[in-house]
Length: 451
Image 1: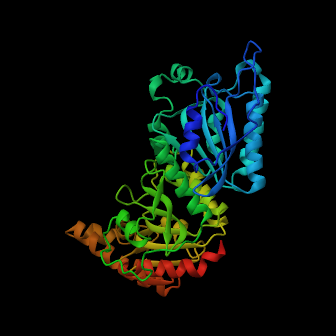
Image 2 (image 1 turned 90 degrees about the vertical axis):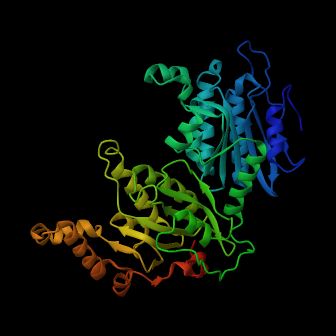
């Protein structure tokens, strides 16, 4: 493999690819500096294998003109993506750039247009993974919108313009513009954070395994009973116990924590997991809905069965901060679920109230839905329903709180228990928590081919 004077980017490519597998393409292509002198090129591109998966790779070489993107470097990136799609192989992009090559003006902008066009064609066709290595400034920041997974090094930064310019306009401290905290916990652009090439290779391989190896041999017992699970088990314990041991890989763990998304396996079959974490909040937010929609988009592209673990009491109506996006974001999520042709399997492990039922468990949406015997399923929570239906009686009672609880319990038992809902035909079964794994495996094996 040819190397420039500084080989940091080649070292990173070497650390994430199988030994001696990287074959560089368009090696001698050179742009020019502002002095019209050959300056090498700010992009390395080629093909390699990662865990025996053939992949196309492009990477900004920050040692050449700060990784800036010009006409020729843009063509190298576009060609790499185009060829990867033709070969039906994943695209891995490693981004570290100061932005467009200013001296090239509109030619650089046209180059960006070509990259975005090829990224859009690749997204949803082949696995696309972007890696933020260092600074990612300017037009390249939008590449993160057209990928299945964005992985960032812990020192990476991303901004649509110079952080200094953005900081001066917004009065935000420059160091906080586009840093890893913003990317992972506030914007949700980053799916995972790594600190080394070895961690990066492990994460990329893990994702490719789920997307490209839908079924593998499992060492876990398909008939294993989840004896420790009960009505008040934390959702993290449910996930750890129900799916194949140590198979769950969470994405965007620091963003919208009331929702958990990630990949896992059931008897070796790759599945997508969407779970509500009522320990954080039992209400769905606009951010949580966006997180789910982004995740489902990738799952739809690669036909993964979707497993919902439902414990949602409805929507967090934060009209102060989310009024502009709440309806649209949840609407987009509902559209994504309803247009998804993949197998959709739900287990109601706690509450399924209002949108929590309609979005994640309704028989109009899901192929197969079961509920734990302790589940509560209804339009409103039991206390709110009691106040609505029996408000006069509660108001007249000597002990109003006790009366409210009693009416709530009565209404819940008569209308919202899992057994009552199942008798109405809206659940396929009511199960013990300990049997969740067996039911999910049976459902995935039955409906999984649908995707």
